[in-house]
Image (cartoon, rainbow, N blue to C red; front, side):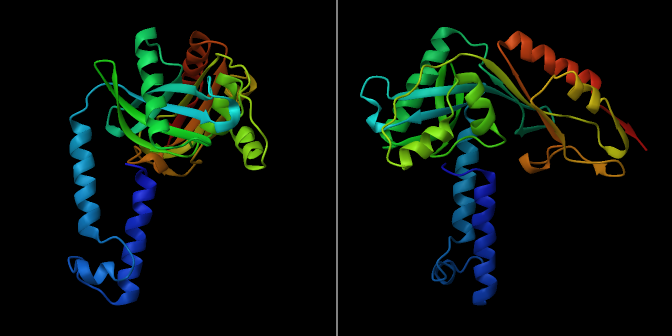
Length: 272
């Protein structure tokens, strides 16, 4: 699947708009809907059901990769996986990521398998110039592709986290390549980061405590909340409804994990 939840939502929204504008009321009138130049809803549902069913067959941890591949950087080592993260999900919603940790605490064998699969996927798709982001499900140390796209990861992953953990600014390289420059991949660094989405109990917010203290201690590059006092917060039902995030950068996993624990200790919500 080459688009995520937001992309699918946009496709559905455009189909509904076209049906309304074209006066088509029956979503099962596939021929009439397709004449409007959009994807009919039964086909979208069919493909979504298939993707969901296939995903249920793959149990295990989920990882994401961000990579750069520039054709004129020389045949040897021109493809580089710049960052690999292990994803954790909310206990109440296995479809919404709660934390991405760079790098995973995996064995050398497992990491090698991830890099090899990522290389095969990108090169098989012909993505010879540019950047890519992919999601995999690991089963018995074998990565199974969930989705891949010719873009960087969102939520400041490509613009902030990848440059820190790898020492390589993938967007800057892409801009230079599109400007006609020949790209030589610089040496990689190996540092750590965590993108943690903050978790709070549902309720009406009276006040938020500890946010300024966490910032003053320099625990994170960024800490942002998606709510303010008097708002009623709920458990996130999808990625867009998460309650806040922290981007924590450091030299190793022990350091960033300790900073994340301190942020969770400091930042708390007082309820009305």
